[in-house]
Length: 248
Image (cartoon, rainbow, N blue to C red):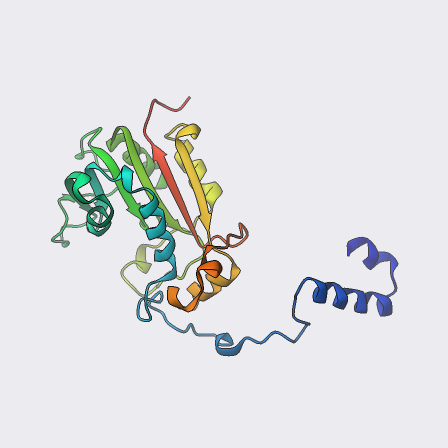
């Protein structure tokens, strides 16, 4: 109402604005019912895992399920091989786990993604990198490593957080550097791969994001509420990138 706000008298403008809010389905000013969410502390600080499946994992796992055919041959996953086994099954010839330190007994490779010269070039047919890149400060270095260690034709399956709790007091929170947008992910990938080999998607909406920030679980929203996409509220970003020729 920018134009009308300048030419319409205030006594007339106020009811016009109220009508527009009603027409758009907005609650009246001071009429929003926050219910259980009117609180300055979240419902849960465990990302919802103490209530069921975390909402971000709903998007992560739906993405990986859609990319099952890519999870084959020699596969690298970060921290553990849960998704490699779940979605790759007998298509996986060899499973490797990378971790930043040797305290993880599941790790077959110890190293930092931003600088891992000991990992040979063209090693992996698939890399599953879920909810990890926010913990790596040197993002360009990490992208160069990922491209280098993928075999030609290999696929990077990447997920990163958009709007998220960071759990500042946890081990993760002490190295949680970044939050992402779809635009940022696409630009990072284009530095090392061809645009035509990259598919980026955003997930989430204001309701799903609010629920996730409060630590609610997937089961507390409907599928329609979870699946609605609003690009202004990017809860999670997924990307599938295929290693081909050098970027043009």
